[in-house]
Image (cartoon, rainbow, N blue to C red; front, top):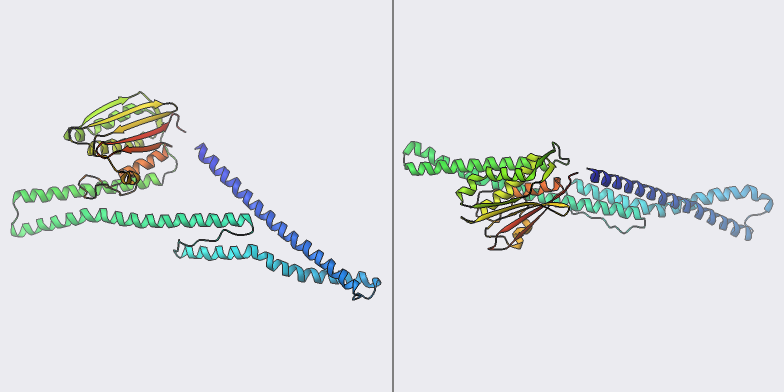
Length: 364
């Protein structure tokens, strides 16, 4: 919390400093125009006087103000037009680029080579914003495509088998085993849709959450034990052995949120372990951090999969044989961010996978 406030205060001071610098630059340019106009006016007066265009020194007090005013108006206007371009042209380009952004063109970029440094910073900030918007748009399109695919597949399956059962009501062509198989598939795909909807809602909730509320003190080791017991059906059915090495650690965070992290990581470790394999879970203090290590005895992952496992809807098993929708580890990643925790993955093909989650010893 304090870090966020300090960061916001630092950004505010930086913006104020930029505004002051821009104001100073503009003031200096106006001063330059006035000084230049004065010097040019004085030079014109001296030249006219030396060429006897000014008839008499006695008339100088009457002629000089006219020359000064006229010269300052003409010369100041000319200088202001040229100098003003230093401000006006970049701002025109910025306005035009904003219009492009408004119309959905996120590829527009501005040249950052201007005379005034603050305008360079403004152009750089605009380009950074455009890059972020372009990345967000690409991600949004990818998310919609993935989301549509994940929803469409079970819906098509449910519709197809439901129609088969409807036809059977009229013609009675299915056996009892076939009817049971079709109803089991419909039930499984319905559960899959329900899980997908729940995970999307949960991920959206966490992504929109910036401040963690409902923090309580609890024992991290006891929480992990409860999650392992909650997953007993899964590790018993796959004949997986669970090894626990848990140090008693008291922690302060949203307990329900952190439970989601362990449900996903430990659940994946059990799911991807070989039948008769083992899952190792360790929780201990390491220097000024708390480390939770979760290892499985599965097939492991290649480097490309490791890079993408936290992406939404990404599944290394493209055949979808395993029960999942590619959102579990995205939820894990977001919870780690909210907890100011670091999560890393080590894996080798044929040698299993290990997740390391490092928490700060004292929460904010």
